[in-house]
Length: 118
Figure (tube, rainbow, N blue to C red):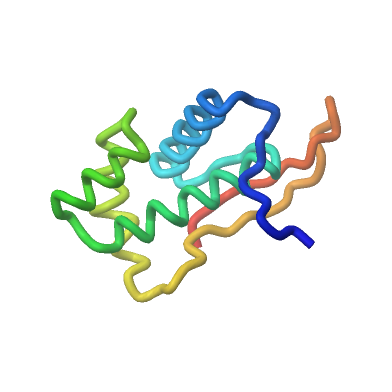
């Protein structure tokens, strides 16, 4: 059983992991697709789902403040998320992204997957 297990550590210190996940979420919001290893993708997907759920509220001060606290590096991505991406999912209770497995990387046989919007 997996009771009370938190996030994956991804073999990084907490500050590095947090920065990496933030940057990958910003990349995903800007480009609409993200391809990386499966464990990283699961964590990015988890963070993205939470941010989109917040962004569905709409373009108001508190929503922007809360999302910028999670993604402080790029305000253009925050605006794109709130104005373009989140309105598509207002009627959807969750599951805004899909993960597509792509096999294994040839160099180190790490499992690779792609994340895209539903």
